[in-house]
Amino acid sequence: MTAFAYRDGVLCAESLPLEEIAAAVGTPAYVYSSSDVETAYRDFAEALGGLPATICYAVKANGNQALIATLGRLGAGADVVSEGELRRALAAGIPAEKIVFAGVGKTAQELAFALDRNILQFNVESLPELELLNRIALEKGRQAPVALRINPNVDAGTHAHISTGRSDHKFGIDIDQAPAIFARARDLAGISLQGIAVHIGSQLLDLAPYRAAFARLVALYREFQAAGYPLRRLDLGGGLGIAYKGEQTPDLRAYAGVVREATAGLDADLIFEPGRLLVGNAGVLLTRVIYLKEGSSRRYAIVDAAMNDLIRPMLYEAWHEILPAREAAPGAAAAPVDIVGPICETTDTFARGRPLPPLAAGDLLTICSAGAYSAVMSSSYNARLPAPEVLVRGDRFAVVRPRLDHEALIAQDRMPDWLDGESPRQMARPGG
Ligand code: LLP
Image (tube, rainbow, N blue to C red; front, side, top):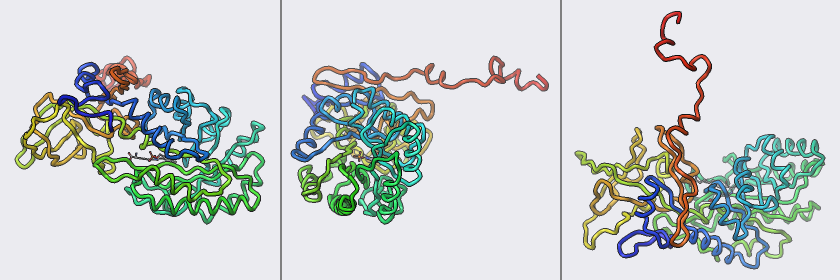
């Protein structure tokens, strides 16, 4: 998050004061920095320099068209997990031949849609999926390019809810079952088996699980290549962690070193699927204090953002830095305060006992590291309006998703014909 910094006591996104953006678009609002996204991509690409790599941005982290297009212009492909994400990636200009389609539950409709678009690869996660894809491809007189996603049974050492690489997780094909499924794939005329894939979890801070997973994957790759399978692609997934609280994050060159070591001499193109790494620290959520409330045992700052805007603290006990948009006076004493939203649930709490300088109603706060898995995981719970998204570039900003209005939200519902036009009173009249 280098683009978000205080200048003369005012927190800015690139060269724009966040207060200015909040005044223009209201709060809550997500604000992203183009330069942070671009720097994150370039740093990763540079670390992988010399490797035959395609970086397929994991669209699930943030599916806004403007962010996908920002990355696309730098050469990124996309990793998608639904027809919706595939459509988004294509609409934002990502070429189909740079798109991989992952996910444990792709439907027939989704597989057919992706096949018609000529995407690079389907990451298949089960035998029934393989058989269905085969049938759909044959019906179309086609062959589907497939990588089998292998579950290497490696513990990623991250939060249980975002860990995916152990055999008791729903993801991928158990490494022990791989030989049988490879053999089956060879017999399916609609399947062109081209690679293997792995993804062991998200927000990894340690390289050891990668080392273990890549070693198992590469051993399998070599074994099947030697057995005559025409493999040519290895998809190493995403998962690199970012600093939310000053954590020591994996050095990108060290990560690339692990990849180089594991794949040395291997005849394979490599795919990477980073999500959080590229956008996580490139975004913040702006929110204003509505009330300060002194409880008998705790102090609360009730803010206008809520768990519907950013659910990570509630779902994963995630810690997000919270900074006042105006820097506290030097020497101002920090006191612990609970930062809570307006939603009618105790879990609607962004931080408990967080030491912050004195706050007042109307103050603007910045919830940091909200570029990934924030807007995409939002909802309109409590009939709250989904917050707008803003993209900054230098001293300019653009609203890249406007705030919906209440009419639009209400208009999403339809009355059934037996309620249409009737007032509730008429409905309730006996025999009426
Ligand atoms: N590839 C696959 C197959 C994945 O399942 C994921 C993330 C990624 C790539 C990208 O992972 P990343 O580089 O962003 O770690 N909502 C959670 C994170 C869920 C991650 C799901 N899969 C959170 O807010 O922490």
